[in-house]
Image (cartoon, rainbow over all chains, first blue to last red; front, side):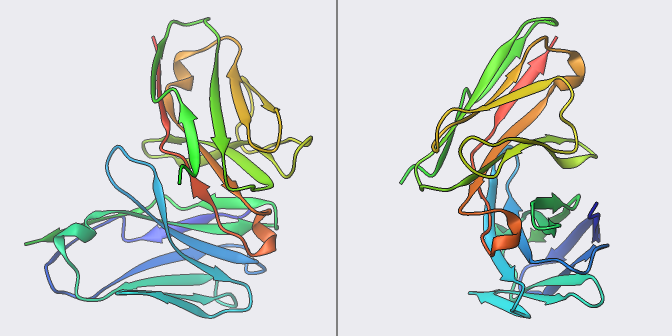
Length: 111
Length: 115
């Protein structure tokens, strides 16, 4: 079974800083990896989906990369804003059937 | 643009009571999923349905049953609720399973408390 870990568990940064969130997975033969954002008490919002043939995806200030051989993905957030404060979850494909989620990184961006 | 709709949003049950959580999607997706989210445990898969007429167990299926009523609807039933089933339940859908280059769309969740 795929297992997913995320480092750090929590992160607090001043507004404007660039930051990197890390995700590691055990089975490198994944098809896809998806990054989500979750605000307190809310559902999950999809940020980026990296398909098997891609090495990275970009959306606005967000850039996610995927290195299947090392079992790692990173989410880069440029010029962070207080509105970016949320929990960020990565989800890795589990043998082509469903996604397994990491525990998340709780991000606080201070004004 | 409704996406994935879950009902109810909140529910309190007494131990031993039964209930059904409803999930419906309007995106013509083939695959649907039920996860539970607990503090310190993250999201764990309960059941999923690859396509209409099929269901499979996930990581934590005990105490739950599911029905894929049609392509749009996927319900989760607790036959005899236990305090350990207190959780936030999320439904998700996708055009295909995770190996088919499609990601998930999530509903807003159901907060269930069993007392």
